[in-house]
Picture (tube, rainbow, N blue to C red):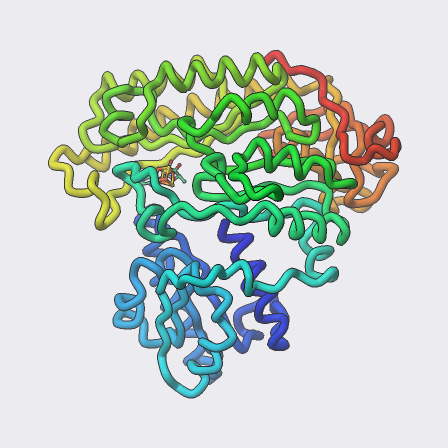
Length: 452
Ligand code: 5AD
Ligand code: SF4
């Protein structure tokens, strides 16, 4: 989400004559786009501001400094107090106002805009230029939904990003079509709770995510679709069927489960149990046998016992994730769980995280190892380290290095996986993908089913 938001801010400022620099020292304006989800991410902002202040003093420059994103939203006044170097604080709903806010800030007034304005920022954020889209590569993000009404007891998102809001289908289709016209081949639909999408459809009715995906799959030249990040409660039957029916929808699903313990899931207010999760996974795998899963986990949620943690380890063992993210519980101010008396000691969280990550790494390694010898379509995304090498993405988001592929960046080629490393795979290219040669460009060939 922050990558996409940063791009939209860059697109807005491009109209004002700003171009991106590689180094803060070369910049007239530095924007820190920040994350508030865990304390560590939020604290980084202040250390980064300290570094920027020092660099600015040493160079005697008048570089302007702005803080955007969810830390800006949650701690606007605090940032202004703790970091006098900051000229401007702008929350995620106000990015379209950046030019006017900057103009005010340039007069020496320190500006804070963390309102949830009534006008829709998406109506005001300009589209990227062809050159900007090209420089960002053939895989792009499109926000379709923002905010969250779920109120998991550990999570700041409903407070920082606000209530759930879905963009109208026509606007999403326009944005996607334009990106495809500019050379994009893969689009990931993003939202804090993307599968809760309920936007106004082209016929005026409310459409769910399945219907939106179906519509986007009809855009000529759009070869791949993904969406992230989802909540198990919103994996409805229509969405599961879309995974069966839409060849463009990649067989890879990021479905955060957070814990394998029913007791902890209830305390987290997730509104589903471990068996619900297994039932969804079974339905998904029946609909799309080559589906791979990833997930998010939190260890050391208040009150988590050894038995609860053992349930999480067991879920991980059974679900066979292709990848996962895992975190120590971080108490966030203003969220219900932060005030819970039974906080888990830091050492125990660290111990559990290490055990969980070992299990998740083994699961990922097993999945990757099972890819050796298999044939995938990969989308060539960027140059590799060695001359002649390109790096592409498998349907499962794995990086695949290919030597001297017979096609340029932006094409989809078929490769056989020859080597499996800890961070990437290597493949040999046999041919351009059939789907890319045949003019029915919208339909990427399905990869061979995976047993893993
Ligand atoms: N502490 C630790 N992890 C958290 N996440 C969200 N809030 C917290 C928190 N307070 C994790 C969840 C979520 C991911 C984006 O971040 O696993 O899915
Ligand atoms: Fe946060 Fe996701 Fe829960 Fe919403 S559904 S409160 S974004 S963890």
